[in-house]
Image (cartoon, rainbow, N blue to C red; front, side, top):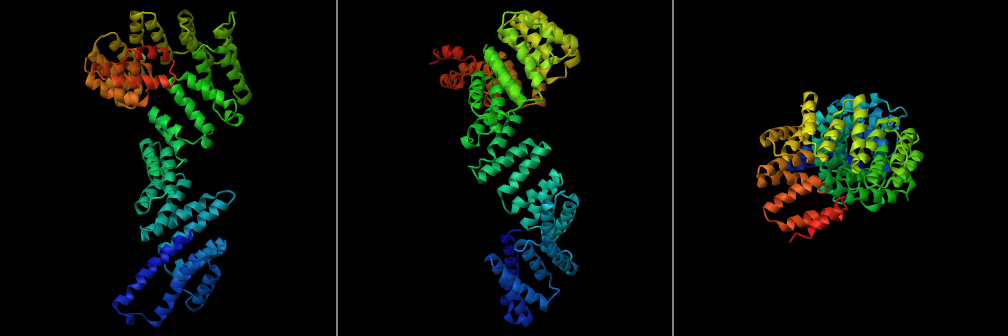
Length: 527
């Protein structure tokens, strides 16, 4: 407990006592006058860091008035704050509470001592926390305006794994005093309860108080990522100072680049990380897969294999998986036959499928998909087949497959979005497409893919202004997606907004999107 806490309590006491002379000095007896002197001097000595003088006064007072609850409490303060004798302090607290059981400050201090004992106990005994929580409830019932009681109650409930109750107390505390520790605890609790918007709001409160706070930027970027505000997440992450760019930073950055399909940026990041073994060792297997995908998507399979060799040395438990994947990459490195079905892990099959598609080796991709579906009826793989059929111009076959999938997956947002986009792309039953697309937005209105599909349907209906509202939201979340760029540019063209078209192209080119060359050609024709 801080000296400021003690001072605040006794300042309040002094204010109450000081009101008596206004009604007439004669109301104070000699005993009251004597007590007042002690009540004023003890906190003064505490504040000045003079515990010996304070203790002498307290002991002198208690010899005369051994049952005074306030001074018994102050003795406990001294033993806790200046003498590090929590057990002795508890004895004085108990004496004070025998006289006035509900006195808020005695209960607060009792809880503080128990919490300190909990922190220093080897086993972290939860019984100490439960008892502390009980005393804090009594303290708050007696005085709801003591910030310290509310703050400690929030911490205790958080330690007891009661995040909702913890944030109840923290919410009350910030109405009295806004502090960074309270908001940091609240954000942690909201993260545990999955209340994403409240978590984001709490991070914003932290930055409102301390705009340069580095501690909050990475968790804020992560929260934006889960909210599907990908570009906001990316912008927030770039604000992290270089000295704080640790494994967590690079892991988030790689995931965002993957969302944006910025393969060149992924490779550049990997090249930076190969110079920092400590950070590289702390990446996740998913980060390595992202790097391998990026190399493979650009046809750089030798470097993809190198990334997997690096991963084998780092992730001992996943060594077999990375070794298996390195083996199947030979399919794209050497002129020799390797049977994809020999892969030991499904993830390796998905890597092969992805690389077949990027190289437009559709026959081999379809053969692999057939083998996968024979083992497991998976919607995602079936939609990959639909995508390949559409790339080959097999529209009727793709539609037939989609309708077969509707039987088992018609309620899936993934299927609904794919089918809605398919109908719009073929100018077929736009109203029907609109209904499917609206259903996906009702379930997940934050998805840039779903926002883009609905915007695209509205373009097909020639409702450009309405389409722009949805496409603008999609673009703000992911300004590097090829389809989103195409669709929002079409809206801007309908409004003759050439400057906005230029800005869209230039941002994507600046970030090295895979289709940069195509955008550079288009940019030449923008006024």
